Length: 401
Image (tube, rainbow, N blue to C red):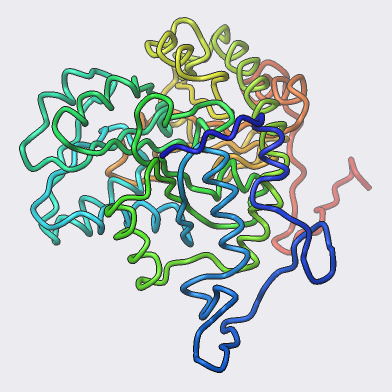
């Protein structure tokens, strides 16, 4: 059953899964690097830990924290978001069927198309923003409906409650990828989701220094027990240090996400009025087709947005190299703002338009980020770059002697 802890998420972020160390009284928990644990005279492990692949104090604390933050019953942490997704698909049986949003994270689609197709797991990709297309794709052997809302990088919005109703009518589970929404802004279990997935690398980690993933369940049933078995036997678990870093970062999650969301909305409004911008993809704008749904199921619209340029592919590819505060890099959710031509990162099978640029908003001042985009888009003339030798030394000229 869902965790009904009534404390506010700010309090849970600081305290869930944490108690002072019983040995030293340390407020911050130690990092338990041990790979094995002492048995008693009978061969049992009375402290609950035997081997770190099967269980570790840091991972146990992190899983408790994440389950409580999402309002779930339990959580299983993995070494990456893709490992978490793969464990869900492995928990199905060959010849079962998955209905999945066509606008889902590129790596999740690759898992189904490249790896699990050989395992005879069938997948139908649909426009999940239209509930009727989900319903039309359902089969007797459909075991799972997978949606991502908002999606990455097109920021599509799926009605979670309607997707859950369709899945449950067929006896299937609904999985919601909540990486962009985060438990701060979106609570999928409250709308009928059965499983919630995150790449903890992104907003939950929040500092671009740790890799991870998690599956949170609404009920500890046979399916989740099978997933837990895959976690332990497959061994794609995060290290104790990664778990410690993630739990440390969770303390500031509500503050970070709300600030990033507020800034993203300001940036989106600026871009929506810019003469070079064709379209802004951000559910916080009233003209976004998913605005009303997002407003109903989210308390904020997140820290990621995309936009397309009127000049096309070449202009979109060139823009990231013109920014000064935004860093040209992959990923999202960190405290530093990032910019990327997403189609280049995803390759030939991308669904991102060639003229699309994705932004991940960090914690810089919104005025500075807007000014940076303004100069990169040509509103402010850029100074000529100083030529350099390959080794990085300035090439002196009569004007800079």
